[in-house]
Image (cartoon, one colour):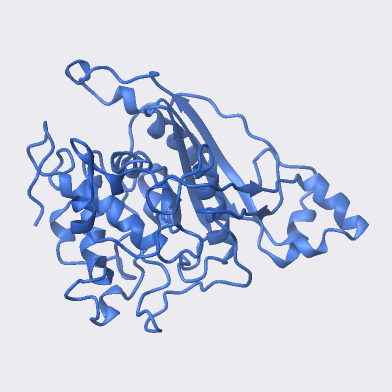
Length: 376
């Protein structure tokens, strides 16, 4: 039962106010569930809402499990231009790269705001926190993704989540939920997946309720994924919240093409060999579908681990894993497009990249000179 409302919010989040205390904790709880399915995440067992709320308090509305998890680790990405690939192909040294699906960067955006947000009594709008929305708008526009159809046109989201409020802000900034509705969005998915947490009275029940396309909380026919969604006002597939905010900031693109390699180490994010599933899998030893939620399938900063300055790279690597079909046990079905978001400071600066599965090697090498759009 969600009851606590943060100061300044009178509608409990689900009707358009600030998120409830429980909705914040649900963010961390869902990330532990995601991390438990990644082989190199620090969090190995999902923690339900009650466990997150019961962890030591470190701030008025933040518990220990709602803070980015300290870790050691690193990430690496190999980037190459199309010209380099054509040259290496002629030399016969590029063939092993064709064993994996390549990914292009088709959009990118950067934006900045105040170094520090103003005092609450001086903050009359969200202008101090708008860099994420602005960067996302730039990247989506460059990638040809309609702002009002993000849930329909983007399959996977890697969102910066150093604290729950950052994840909620990101969900709204990229267009998955209207302003003020991210708490309800998270609560909807937590209620849908709560039977998978240890100790849940329904944890051993049939997974039939997870059938169909659950990537954004809707079934394959476009209907609601649970009975409570009709009261949340959340968008259906193809009806994401339109953004009328003006775009600011700039983006410098580069022509790149290549593959990725991931890292090793405590809390690190490593790639896996082979092909992942592109369809929701029912049954099996765990009774879980392949993808539970197409946001931070590695667990994010809250549960996978957050080495200093590396977490956004983790999200980039995980996005490539999803688009390459190598995210075993957590694969987003038929993922073709991904969005990755990272921030710095106190929402002070944001960067967003939109990735897409690249053409087949033969088509890629026949496109002629490098195109203006970015590729990875």
